[in-house]
Image (cartoon, rainbow, N blue to C red; front, side):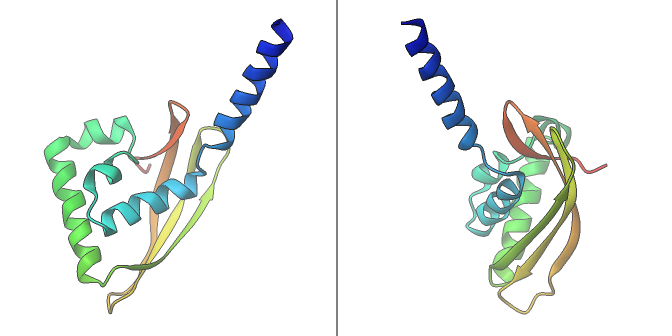
Length: 125
């Protein structure tokens, strides 16, 4: 019985670990959520520290403005993320290429941290 429980534990741990998204995927989810106007989904990609530091009203306003900008630019054609680091912190850049006439948003700094086992966008240093 103990072996069976251990086996089930190991398999379930591997399953849930393999379901974790890569840090680059969180950046993509964040921008795609903004593109589709899903502000709540975009907020889920942000760390608790970032959310509390900006405050709910200011954060919602900023995300809504960014969502409108993406819409004005015709949507997003591509998101290119380049990250470095090990462990629970990644830093790098993100480039947004728009479908419309807007110039690409290139090499914006991005930082991610693992929070409760999930990658979240946090404040850049």
